Length: 457
Image (cartoon, rainbow, N blue to C red; front, side, top):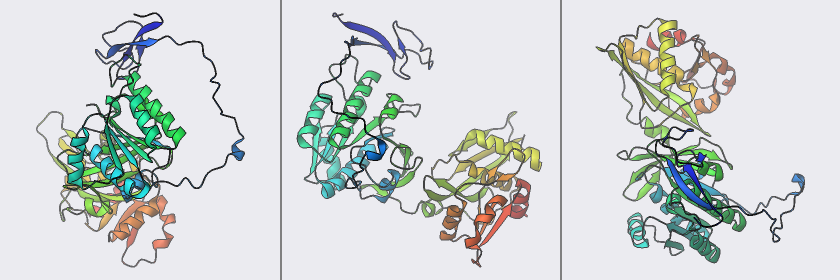
C-alpha cells in the first residue's frame, strides 16, 4: 500500500465502515457485504482561493422567473415531477431491470431535444448502435439528441462542459466510475462520488441531469440509500414485467408533491401515458359479484378510483391464510380483527384474500372501509351496488374516521358516473356543493356496522 493510503471495509448495502473485515455487517445484518476500499488520506483542509460564495440575507436573494421548467411533453411525467423539469436539478429514476426506464427516458430525451435544444444521452451499458436500434423502433431520431457510450466520470463531465446540453441522461449510475477511487464500479464510494460530481455540475451549469439507478432484489436502489439523499428528486418506475401497465411514482421531490403517481401503458412504440387512470382501472370491473367494491384513493395531487376485491373461502388448514396484493398486509389484518370483534363475523376458519385490481399499490388508510366492505360482501356472498363508492378510515373501535381531500374524491366519483357514495359522517359538512345533484346521493356513516347495513341489506 502506497504512502498516505488507507484501507477500510465498507458494507455495500448500508454503508457501515470497519477497519477490519467482518463476515456479517453489524448494522444491517448482511453476510459478505463488507468490501475493502483503499483511499488517499485526507490532507489538511484549506479554503479554495477561487471560491466566490458570499452569504446573503434571504430576503435579498432574487428568484429568476426566467428559469421556467422544461415541459417533457407527457402530462403524466410532468405532473409527477411537479409541473416539469427544473433547470439544474438532479433526478434519480429507479426500477427493476427491463421495466422500461431507458425506454421512457429515451422518449423524454427526444421530445426535449425537439423543443429546447441539445440533449446528451450517456450510456455506460449499451453502445450507441444498440441505442440507435431502440430509438428507431420508438421513432426517437432527433438530430439534437446526442449519444455517447462512456464509463469514466471525468470524460462525461468534459463532454457536458463542452457541449452544454439542456438535459443530460446517465444510464446507469452503478456502471459509472471514478478511476481515482480504487473500489469497483457500483460500490458505495463510486456511486456517491460520481453522483456528487454530477450534482455539482448540474448546479453550476444549470443543467438538468437524470441518472438511472438499478433496484436490488429487495426492492431498494443499489447504492444504497445514500444515493437518494444526494439527489433532488427520486422517481420509481413500478410494474410487472409481463403486465403492460407501468406506474411512475415520486418518492422524493424538492420541487413538487411527493407520492405523486403517473400511469403509462407499454406498447410497440414505447410508453404511452394514461390520462384517465380511474377509467382504466375500472374498465374490467365485474358486476353483481360479491367481494368487489370501488373506493376513491388520493395519490399526490390526484384522486383515483380503484377496485378492491376480496375472496373469503373455507380453509382446511389449522391456520387460515391471509394474502394481500397492492394493499398493506398489516392494515388488512387490523380490519379483519375489527370485523370479528365489532361486527361479529367469524373468520377464524376462513382464508381471506384482498387485492387491488390493475396492479396499482395503495397504502393510505382511507381504504379501510372499502376493504372491510369487500371482505363482508364476500363472506356473506352478497354483491355491493355497482354504482356505489366507499371510502373512510376505520379505527379499532369500529368507528369510521374522516379522511383528507374528501371533496376532490367526490368530484372524481361524480366524473365517473357513480350514483351513491358512503363516506365518514365527519366529512359531510364539506359536501354542500354537491347537495344540488339530484341523481347523486352521499351517505355519512359513523360505524362499520352502519356501513355494512346500508350496503349489504
